[in-house]
Image (tube, rainbow, N blue to C red; front, side):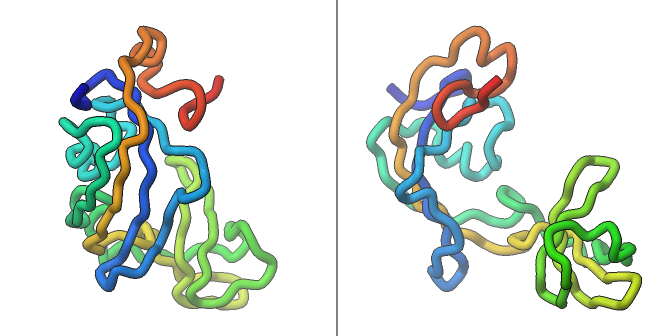
Length: 160
């Protein structure tokens, strides 16, 4: 059965950078589950999975526009140190969480001052061409409830 919209897909992945170094993997963990065709997955990964079948293993190298986005060089901001969450002592290069109008966001610290920090709000992998090694573990028709909710339920998916 080929993967198409309104299917719950489970897959394993390894994410590699331009030099082939592993950045992330779910090896040894439960597969990732998502509802295909409902904007639950990066567009490039979802497009690569479309039409595949259970058991297929493949690699795809994707442009930034279809994964974490293009770097925005204007995405540098100064924020009060009191808004940085995650550590007690901060240094350049560390990642912090801040609360924004759109929810929590991860930022990278560029420069620390006593009261203010200069941060980069781009995703850490923005602007990079990335390779995904993918293995389709399972695929099934989504339930009416999953389609109505817009996401997969159960193991590897959303739990209410």
